[in-house]
Length: 253
Image (cartoon, rainbow, N blue to C red; front, top):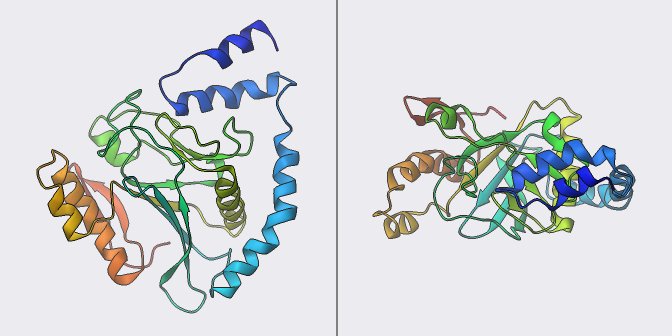
């Protein structure tokens, strides 16, 4: 490894997103990295047919629209898939989040090591099979809502390796499953897979327990999207309006 690359890989950086970004553009310059494309192809051969069968058994398909939900307090990430027989989404799997950083509340600025809260999405060009953290995808922070409030940050990921300084870190086994599924889903023309990130499960009890928080008004706004999905099992489509999230209700994904 060159002296330049050694410096890059030993720096202590402010966020896993920054590390991921630098790694993405330096990996091709060193021959000491494992061949990620071979590892990914092995995963496809070993796991893809099993995952597809598991979906079919639940009345789902890898071709159908999907939704990812994450809960910071409970350390859970859920993968929902639109039913093949109705407009509603069904839970495919719930995964443990291996590591996250920060506290409850939104991400405000680059380097604060906060995991975001709000409504994001992953698009095909944001998938990174050559990640330092095994596999990863960018959630699209900051979105239009964040930018309207002057919030900053970049390259916030859901990734493997169970190490986080601002991202959601999964076990390698979990991220491999999630990555293979959404990678395949994009082959069927889906523009984006929404990612809804909540501080906690937004039940009335959990809200009342935190009604003195400075973020309570923000969380009440998030709860509108949460409640619609809990009631209808169809994700509302959020958009930024006057410093808040507003929602188009109906089948959009």
